[in-house]
Image (cartoon, rainbow, N blue to C red; front, side):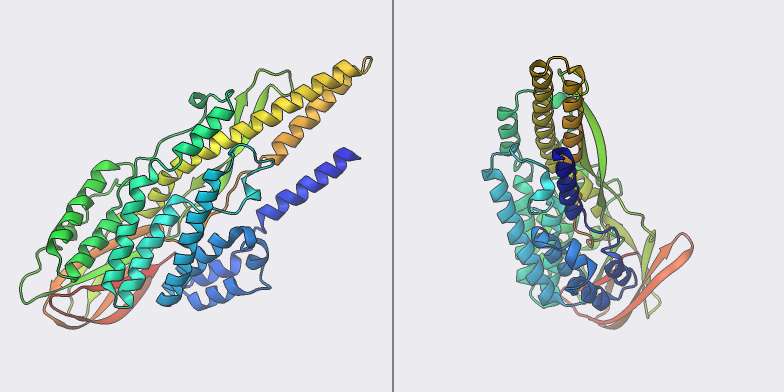
Length: 438
């Protein structure tokens, strides 16, 4: 009876963390169709499946990230800024709390905690807030956001080390050399540096623009796993706009950010069977299928230029995930080893104390292993509506009014086309943003 009650309670706990598989369906449909108002309505629906199963009190960061991004696509730039700034503060608070805790003492799994955000989410908050400020006519605000992003990158490499050391100090049985852990090589964002070039140029700070221009090139050389593509050809012209001309810049975002799925690994342990190995379940970040393969900008004058990949944001997400993943591996291994050791000890005690019942120890050991494995559910929470790719392009033009159309192509041809009217002016930033999240 006790075992049945424990199993039922554990099942309910794990189910409450998982959420319904189709909870995002209505929101996804709106985002895929470019109907961002409908997507927001579905996300904010208090009686909808997303609010009931995904955006719970433990997942407030997810709520503000997802609503902030969809608001950005909908052109609600002030609302987007407010949500993204709230998410940023909650991420900072969550990490401060996690460092102060005795890591390794959680009884079940990370799903029982408030979601704390991933590093790439924290970084791209500033990218999209910088664009929010630009669209509201505040280039100084845009530059503040870019500087905040660069400051974050300076400490991301070391932010988890204290927590990892604490896990190792209290769990001597862990051999990190036998665990799947890698270090992230990402320390500079080409996308952020590109926006820095544009914003500094737009405010007349040529020297600062040149610094970010040089750092943009450094980003490619420092993280070849992320930047497999060449630097966009238009970048070299960003600091040399001829007198009497205006420069039109286009940035386009395509696809959708990665998701997390569970993966299982086994750690051999020096205990009697069936507790001679710990099975741990970990979150694995994988890319989502993308429809768009290329894009080009076409002017009503007949001029056209291709938009080139400046940052594979999906690759940045996977690369920066390595650091938090390493800490997750250590914590999960520590919990699993502790639980398995306790299960093995109970099995031995049951065998010693109940003479003539040789099978009792094995049964206790088996039930302990079942509980340990069932309770170790990976935390697969992740924001859903950041884009996967950032494409850019630019052209020098005679100042005046233009119609700019961006065509997005898939393997079968044209998928989506969007046109905007804009005025190109001399000695200012003329940046237009396009989105196709298919």
